Image (cartoon, rainbow, N blue to C red; front, side):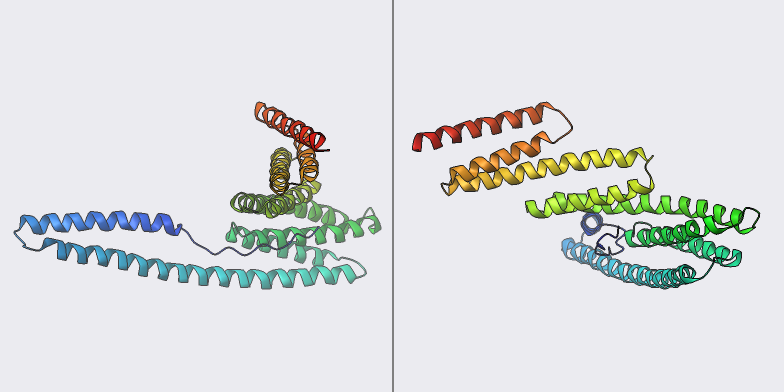
Length: 304
């Protein structure tokens, strides 16, 4: 299942806030050192020179950071372009074998070499999710070709061990990259869900992360970390949905729509009950919603 491509991250090695806090601290230290030296030497206006020294440190730090960022961005973009070109070439070769009458030993070795090369390139890019996803897809297509070929190969054919070995190798590479892709994208989507104030966007991000985990579990069913992550995401999704319906219920009450609010609270209670993890906090939330439902019922009955 193909996932929606995320926005590509830019290569910032040190967050700007941390960098400038450190720069300010160094500049301040330079200011007081210069001021102290000039004051002890009898300078009548030591703070002027100290202020200039402080400005030079801050200005120099800004210039250095911009130069480093531009260089890093150029290197990153160049590496990504090379990676895209290599992956496109490798994918064309795999597609050619899909249309070919059979996969020869030479073609098999060539494809495995391309996959290994692209795998190393993706590792160089590190935290770039798209690179891992593309290698994962490349491996999947190769494995599909190998599985198509295997039933047609004679028992004594030298292609048989070559295809089996190649399929196993591609499966190991695919496992590494699908897990790397899942880890990076899940972290991004979880962070996006936590930073947005809109419930709809929170739900969409968590659902996409769960879908990604499901894709990874299809290829790595024995990976315990995936199951644990999915459980946490499921609980997070239930919590977000509960808050979403609570907010809708409160707006309905504000607008005098008690029956609509009652339905929203029931929806919130339904999603709260779908959480697998029992806790005192969840029980307290359920009790609070029950009280709100009973209060609304009483108000509705009193006004009817």
